[in-house]
Image (cartoon, rainbow, N blue to C red; front, side):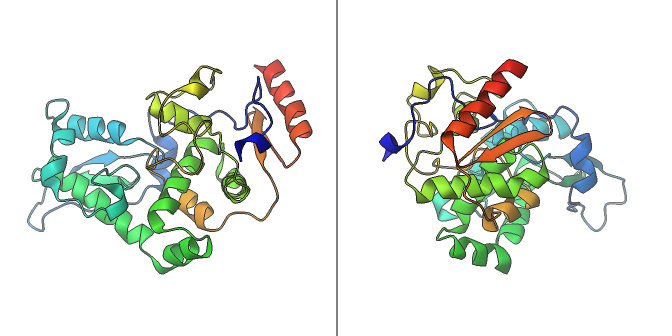
Length: 270
């Protein structure tokens, strides 16, 4: 089925994965969901921990370590004893279920309790009726929908583009085409960059969606509600390609020749 996809050459299918490592989280804070972690008798004003949309699990672990003032690596080591309520498909990996929100922290908060609250919040958000119904409409389970939402979060340049990015993913899956998402390669290489080389697309990884068909094995970050909404309600359209020529100018098309032209404009603007 891959032979139906034109040779990549210098072509970039996606906008090459927007950089998800948000330094301040300032834009996200306004839309973050407050999740209380306080005990009833705790009368201190807690510090807060904000997890922006799209952060990877490794970033979340590091942020929790810093917020709780514990040695680096403590939160990741707490996973086995956190008793996280993850779907079976996750196989104990909370990637995708560390819900982006602003979390107040009390003196009683521990890495395990913080992680547990994040996952419980994700289960409430992703277990809602409209999410499960949307997953069913697309012949997917909720975990697969979260995986798609994580790619949307990494690839879309704005909330307005999310539904179209979702549609590209579904259209390519329906046609038996590889997804060719640079964001999944970035995840495999533990980086965030706008440049993906031909060599990168040949790496031996289950997250290499140039070489492997279908969805990556897990989410590639922790998506927010907007991305999840797009994943279960993609915008109608026949698009198969997209590229961000410049900020605010993302072009979607079903025509490969037109996409080549758009990519040429992108390369000139670099």
